[in-house]
Length: 188
Image (cartoon, rainbow, N blue to C red):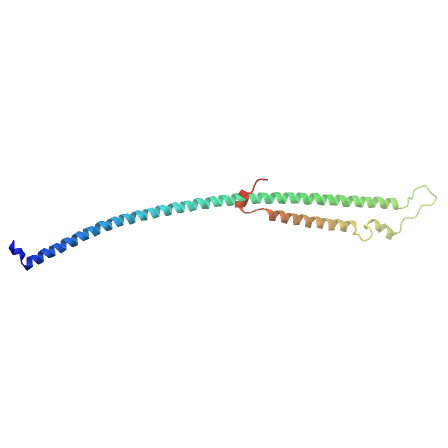
């Protein structure tokens, strides 16, 4: 043993100890990095799983939003169709009433006109002469400061058309196109 106690032996033992310490440190580092690698692999797999869930949720939400948009578009189209039909019906009814009133007025004036003409019948010796031509035109006119019946009817039809158009625009503007508020709105 004394042979190892000289400077070369001590240096050899020192080098062996340093190598042993370095090997131990290297072994500990390998174990630590293996644990870190396992942890990073777990984190990576968790992140990939979370990403897959996020993508799946996004697709599900997009599909649900598309379905809600289709349902909302169908609801809005139905409401607008009802408004269009109601407006067209009201418009036609008001026009028919205005035309009937105009026809009644024309018939009433025609009736007044025929009553105002002379009766050429056999009651008297000489028939009373008829009204002069300018006076006959008064049956066409509505009277002083009024339109003739045909023009009055045209004006009335246009006024009805404009009135119904205004009602239609207001009704269409009142249709709620937002699906979220339409669902939360109480039923009528």
